[in-house]
Length: 131
Image (tube, rainbow, N blue to C red; front, side, top):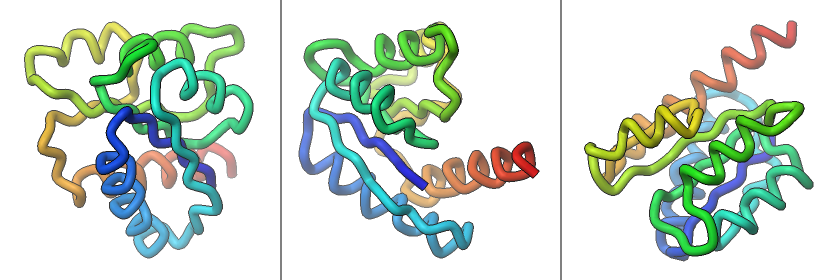
């Protein structure tokens, strides 16, 4: 499995990387690659090039934020096949996450167990569809 973490903040990228490593233990599916991007444009490019199963994007970024990234990936033709999760700064931005087409969103501070469970749940659902 490939995972892409998009955030301008290196600490956020590291924390998400550590959190999703627990997905390996829960799902039994190894995370082969954890890719990192520093902004939305780099994230869009990496998502298209590497086709990760899950993209986790921090709301606050320069050069295209998480909403633009999700909208671009989910609205492309053909649409991005993976899931896009957004980490929100404010609960008031939930409507933007819905508008963007994101598969899920979490308001900071994010509970690492909740995020790991969401990734695991998505992967298990995707695995059932592929059978």
